[in-house]
Image 1 (cartoon, rainbow, N blue to C red):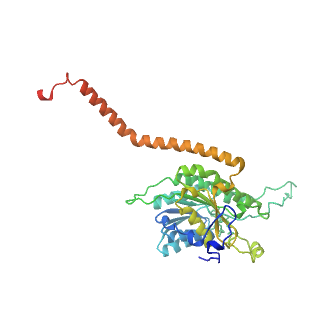
Image 2: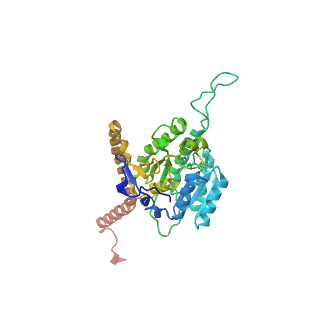
Image 3: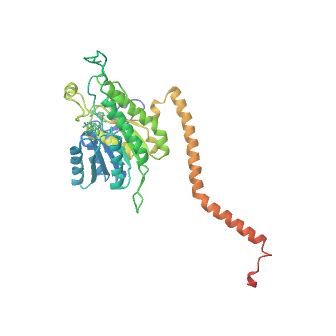
Amino acid sequence: MSTTSLTTQDQLVAPAGFTPILDGQLFEHAERLRDKVVIITGAANGIGKETGVRCASYGAKLVIGDLDLVGAEKTVSEIIASGGQAVAVKCDVTIWDDQVKMFELAIEKFGSVDVVVPNAGIGEPGNFLEVKLDNKTGKPQKPNLSTVQVNLIGVLYTVHLAQHYLLVDLRKVDTPTQPLKAMILIGSMASWDGFPVAPIYSASKHAVLGLMRSMEPSLLLKGIRIACITPFFADTGIIPTPLKVFLAGCPLTPVPRIAGAIIYAASHPDPAKSGSGYVLPDDGPVFEVPKEKFKMGVYKLLDDRLKSVEGIVYAVRLTKDVVKLVAKPLVVTVIGLGLARAFWSNRDILPSFMDI
Ligand SMILES: NC(=O)c1ccc[n+]([C@@H]2O[C@H](COP(=O)([O-])OP(=O)(O)OC[C@H]3O[C@@H](n4cnc5c(N)ncnc54)[C@H](O)[C@@H]3O)[C@@H](O)[C@H]2O)c1
């Protein structure tokens, strides 16, 4: 993995409340991915491909859905050539049925879904800031919103389906493995800050971060962890040439480090880390932003209230589970005691065993 010189804790000055995660830590729980089924959209190229290949190197089984089937099959061949398991399907993330097919393929081929990374994304075609008038009518033309279709609607479809399929498990496992269920969303530094030349891209990435934060409490109750990885520019096909020229000399975020952050967020065993953002603001280390960091003022108050509701929901679920577990033996015991009592109180009128 390409690294920067920032490799020791002493050299780092983390923004207040942010925790640096060094390169050496990114893969420390990656062994937990062994035999897990990982779905990544957009893994024919760039960040998705790097993440898929690395997950497979730790023993994960990959399902890749991409519009670029040729590229997706190349990723699959690379994984298989290194002794891994993977399968690809043509999938346009903006088409619901394509996404259902991708999840169904995972179940059919590998029996479960354990980690989902809705990574497919595009930049921003057109110029939202320029209002074009129709030649004939002189009225404003509809803007191109394909960025919202792929980066937001596509992600919403994946996340919605993941809520169902992460709980389906048809594997016949002799030795049960440690459960690991995760959704890792891909934001951007444009999730936190505006991006003046691409406002729709920035809006879509702000939305992805908001989606992660909003879903975290209910997913936690289902045992599913969620996080959002927010990198600065990285050298992939999503960056158009003029932007690459503009960025010349800027320290870009290394793609392997982004993949490392995705794997760290997916494989970390501590449930308290669910809901974190992971910021990669340049070519330096990954910073973890804990979910509490942005809970200020009235948000903190609402969050505390939500936590008490969560506590009640948890208690109700726990009671239901306990009742499910003990109900049958309890009924059998009560019936048994009832019969014994009836037998005992009527022992005089029942024929003596000795008489039979
Ligand atoms: N590269 C960066 O600078 C950068 C920075 C921050 C966040 N990101 C995010 O990382 C993610 C991956 O981007 P990347 O940099 O690897 O770009 P990339 O162009 O290398 O890869 C994107 C992949 O998504 C696929 N894709 C595009 N539209 C699709 C659709 N409708 N259905 C299915 N697949 C589709 C492409 O075929 C491609 O394989 C994106 O969500 C992007 O917004 C990238």
